[in-house]
Image 1: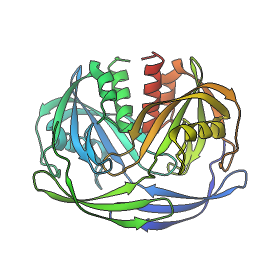
Image 2 (image 1 turned 135 degrees about the horizontal axis):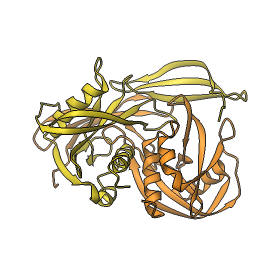
Image 3 (image 1 turned 90 degrees about the vertical axis):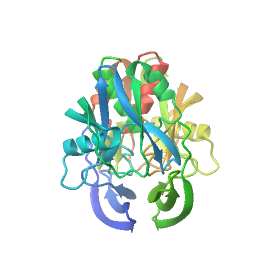
Length: 182
Length: 182
């Protein structure tokens, strides 16, 4: 398990848009093989995915249009950690903006990658508890649907055609383990 | 739950590299709000993630350098569905190339997105069973480490610092449900 990570021989930006940056890396593996890879550079501080736990057995989900998949997606509130913000601050802000609840406690459960081979991005999975109703204005183009889900119905959630993100499965699994459902 | 999906007013490619394509979309939501989004276009047929089930309780994992995260990543064998290939053919090919086993049976468990808001990409999660040793040459820069994992040790797997992909959690969760571990 102690294989040496490849040496970076060169790297440069090969494409750039408003929100995406592509970097090319020339790597040399420990066996001498040289390979050129492209990877997508995420924002430095990543994103947060918040699990708003309303009570011992209920979580708040949102239903929001996903421009990537071109349909409404059912999942957890999420957002980028803004420059200068901590993951805690971002979690509290997004929780107020997206599900209208202020958490008194936020706790980092884990951080997940999206595609380890070609994206630097990490999403921090945050359990938000001791919620009180207290909303804040977000930048959504339309009001989000907030849906209360009973944790014992997790089988139905993973079978729901609008619940599709890998990181949402990760959050659900960590939550179910945390609450001793699995 | 019957909210109308936004109307696409315009779309065009704003950045392109060897493997990434960025598309800009102008959308009008049902309330009249117009928003401009960028999204990453994935390959048409997506990718496959294969769960090679060695016997009732063991799965084969791989440990491979992930250029995105810049370290070795522990997870399931994966690969792009090549043009003209079906998900079944891609799953069988990747299973031979990455874990050296030919599955007699492959079954689609689900398809997951990576980031519904800004990626069109889907990964098809495929359960591969009735394995026989039979490898094929892949295009990896170095031999992959293949690791046999007992399903009852799933807690240790999700706590492993090198097991980080959201879609790998999704695959593990579906597998554990399939095998009645959860």
